[in-house]
Length: 610
Image 1: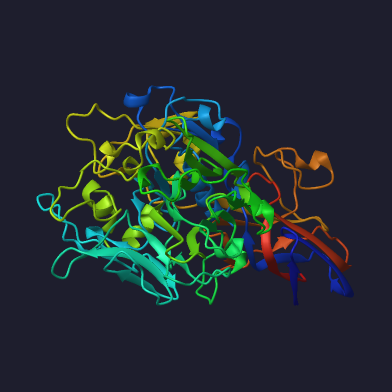
Image 2: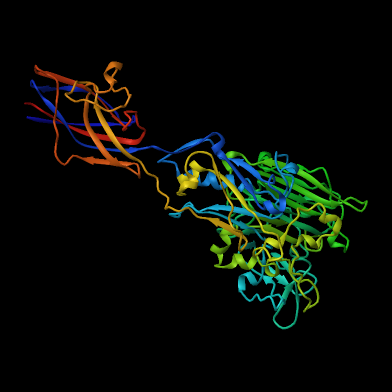
C-alpha cells in the first residue's frame, strides 16, 4: 500500500508537519520523493571592502595620474532575486565619479584638476552584454530648434536655422515666438526671435525666454517642462540662465521675476506647475530682493539665499547675474554668480545638498516658470545638460549633431545675418571675462573626438575584477582578486567598454533532501562538514545520514521544478510497525548548507509498506 503526503513551507525549504491523522506503516516501510518545487535565492555577487571602490580619470595625459575621482558601490550581497538592482548602483557609482569641478574644490580627497566637461555614464542593464558607456553632455536650450534636429548642418555653411522647438520641452499654456523686440500679449511662454529675411526667424539675445507682455501673476501658470523621456544628466550636470532683465513691476513680490528648478518626479501638464515638483529651485523676484532657493529638505518652502542680484537691468548682458544649479559627483549646489563692483565677480553659493543613497542615480526633471511680465522679467541663455543617452531615443542620431560645436552652441542668433559662427564658443564664453572666472571651465576640444594636434588622451577606469567577471568580462586579465584598469579609446564624444561574454547569472547545484524526523538507510561519503543532524558526530565523513534524495539542478533563473522519472524508495529503519504524526525535512545545497528561498515551496512524498 502506498500513501501520499503533500507538504508546503515558506521557511527556506524547512518542512515541518504535525498531522492530526497518523500515518500507519508496517514494518520495513520505505519512502520516496515524488516531486518538489521551490524558488531559490542564491548569492550572485558580493560587494564589500576595497572591491567596492571605482576610480575614474577623464584624461591622465592632460590632468596627471593623480587626477582621478573615486566612489564606492553599496556594500551588498546581490542574489538571484535582486541582482538587477546592482546595475543601477553601478551606473550611479560611475556617475558619482563625474565632476566638472576639482575634487579639492568640492571638499573631496584627491585630484586638484578639473575634468572640464559635463558627462554621464550608462550601463546597458537591459541588454545581453552589460556594456559600460560614457558620453559627454552638451548644454542645450530647452526650446530652441537647431540643426541637431533638422539635420541641415554643414561645416561649410554656418548660417543657422534657429527657431522654436517642442521636441524636448513643452510649455504651458503654449510656446510662441515674436518677430520684433516685444512679446505679444497672448498668454504663454515666449522665445524672442527676429526676422532674418525670407522664412527665417532666428532666436536673438541669447535665446531669451519670458511670459507674455502686460500680464504678471503670483501663480505658476507660465512654465516649461521636459517631454516624456527627457531627464537631467545623471553625471556632472548643470541648469543655468542669465537674468536678462529684472524690473520692479510695483506689485507684490511674488508677481515679479522667475525661477529655474529640478523635480524628482515627472512633470505633468496642469493649469499651474504643481508645488510637489519644486524639489530644487532658485527664484529671483524684484532687483532689491534676495534670491531664494528650495532643497528637498525644505518641504517646498523658499529659503533666503542671503544675496540679491548685482546687475540685471543695464544693456551690458555679459555682466548680468547668472543663476545656476549644478551637480558634481553626488552633490547639487545652487549659485548666484554676480559682478563684485571692483572689476571681479563672486560665486555666491546658495545651498549645498548631498543626494542620499536612496536617490542615487534617480532621474531629475528641469523646469522653469515666469511670474513677471515680459517687460519686467526675462531670462536669457537658458542652458541645461540632458541625459545624452536619451537624446537619441528622442530622435535618432541627434546626439552627435548636438556634440558638433556649431550645432551644440544652441544659444541662437549671434549677430548680423551671414556673420560666421565662432566654432569653439560654448555659451559660457558669452559672459564677460570677469564672470567667466567664476564659471566651470568647459573644454570643447573633446567634442567630436580630439583633434590631431591635441595630446593623446588617456582615459582610465578602474573596477574590481570580481565585479567585472560578474558583468561578463573573461580572460586572464580579469582572473584572481584586485582591480583591473581599462584605458578605452576616446572617440565620438565618449567611449564604450563591452565584455567578452553574454551576461548570465549561473547557479549549478546538487540539492540534498534530508528527512530529519525519521532514520533512513542512506549514507554520505563526501568531504562536507555540514551538520545534517542534531548529533554532530553524524555529520562526519562517511557516516550514515538521512538523505532521501539528491537533485542535480542548474537553476540559473532561481526556479527548481523536480519531477522524479523513476521512483527510488529509501528504507525506513523500522523493524516494527509505526505511526507517523510529524515530519521534519530540509533541502540543503551541495555543501550541505541551508539555502534561501522565496515564496511557497511544495514537496510530495510517497510512503510504501513492504
